[in-house]
Structures are given as structure tokens and as C-alpha cells.
Image (tube, rainbow over all chains, first blue to last red; front, top):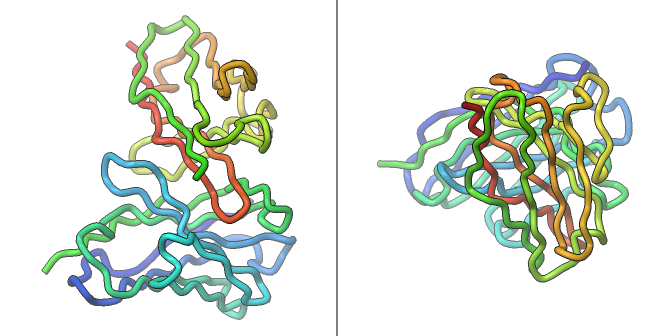
Length: 123
Length: 110
């Protein structure tokens, strides 16, 4: 049973870079034809897909965030990472990592998810 | 852009049946599969329905999903409500360049 765990700073200053890592704690990140995603939820708001990375390193991003996002993968560490540049208070949210079981077919279904980590943008 | 809207909250008594809707805007809900996730405080979301009406193993058959083309909506029904069903429920679908989530519905079982 694949399990995911997010890690990273809980507080980031405005204009700086938010950096998070997701570790696949059981199972291999290269096993199966999956894409590895980041999703966030600001308090009281809807979930928002940020983007995903494939084991080859290819990426796809939400058009609304594409100019500020970079997602990468390190298969040797069983990890993938998120960088969000030039953050503002609007980027304060709980950030989740998740496995997309069908991104290759364009029919996204996220399962499983990490438990999420709160990142606050404040000076 | 395609969007999904959900009621902000619903409540029902234990043992009853509740239905949560997920209505499409600027697109047809029936064109792409809909997933439903359950999220409890402090935990990541888990799938209760995928591909409109399929249940993952381990999800009780009290949970069911459907699509109504006439109202352009997907629905999640939970029968025989238990207090443990109290959670937030999100619908999710996709379009060509993006993934779409509904705003979430808080289910209270009282």
C-alpha cells in the first residue's frame, strides 16, 4: 500500500520560494505508470491542482500557476518536490501530495494522498 | 472554464440517507469521469467513488455515485448514515488542460 508524506517549512516570507518534498514511504515511485501531483487547499476554499511530474521528469502545471511553479522528481530518494516562487499571502494553504493513477490517459484520479502540510506565507 | 459547484453543507440524522450534488458549469459533467473524496480533519482525502459510480475496495456499499444528465450533475449518496461519515466531501473531474475540484460539502451527522 503506497503511502505519501509531505515535509518542508511551515512558514515562508512573502516574495520568497515555497519548497516542499513528498516522500513515498512504502512502495517505489517508479512502480507503475503514475504521475505524482501537488494539490493545495486554502482555508475555507476549494482544492486546487498545482501540477504533476512523471518518473521521466516531464511535468504539467495548472495554467493559473504555471509561471511560478516547478515540480521535480528524485527517483533515487523516492521523492518528488514542489517549488512555488514569489509567494504571497494568497499562497497560504494546506499542501497535499498525491498519486495520479490515470494522468497519462488524461483522466485524473488521485489516490492515495498524503495527510497534507500547512504552509503560511507571512513576514 | 469548466467548474463544479457543491452545496456548502448538508446535515442528516444517523440511519438516514443523504445525497450531495456536484453540478457542472461551462461544461457537461457526463463528458468525463467524476471522483468523490472524503476528507476528515487532519487527514488527507480518500476515494469513496471513482469513475462516476465505482467503489474502491474497502468502501462500504452504503456509498454510491450517479450522474444525472438532465441536471448536469453528479451525486454522492450515503445510506444508513453513521457518525463516522461526518466529514468534508469533494467531487473532482478534469478537462483538457486542467483538473477541476468542487468546493466541498461539509456533512454533519446529528
